[in-house]
Image (cartoon, rainbow, N blue to C red; front, side):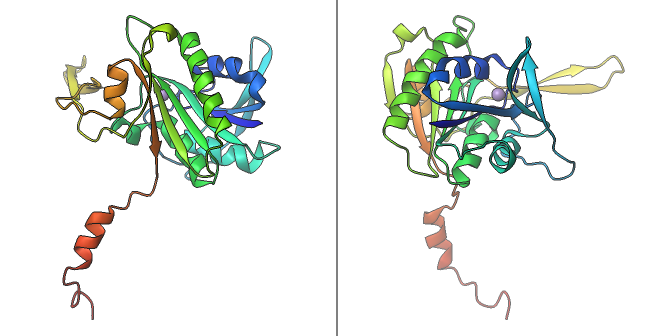
Length: 256
Ligand code: MN
């Protein structure tokens, strides 16, 4: 099996290293990832400056290819000019921090998987909820491996994408798996406003991952209750109900 592995935390991040190490006997793994952290860049692409690919070594060991671009750039470039064989699956992660609800839209981790899906490859985004109580990325990687193995056994259709979120628990305390839908309400996010030494204000976005809403069947609900969340996502953003509705409006006469 040919596996293309990427992420948005960057090629030196512990999540991608843990996952690569844990799944390395599943197939031939090629790592192509941003050379610096690209969390929160969403589905951005680079066209205003040139992209470069460099071989990255850590402790004298070749670990993969670093790209001075976004996660979506990495997937495009990897398939265009790095991998020798087309991947059977593209995996993005493991991200440090969950990617659920509307955060999916900001996520570079998910964007890499979306890019692979657009290009016609089955893909999996894997994220691990961060908490102060439990931070063992190795445990999360062992869980991710079992999930990935089951997914590839079932042969995801080309162009489809699963968003996997692992709760912040030791593997033996995770309650199970829930197939979920994306939570679509707002999170309680604020800015922390501070004053710099020059007397001017500056701001830090403070995400809480908490919402006033609770909804059964959603990705956030699953991880909050100690389950692994798996959400099938699509990138066609068309609102078909609204399409039907506005189609009936009187558009004649706008242009003649
Ligand atoms: Mn990230």
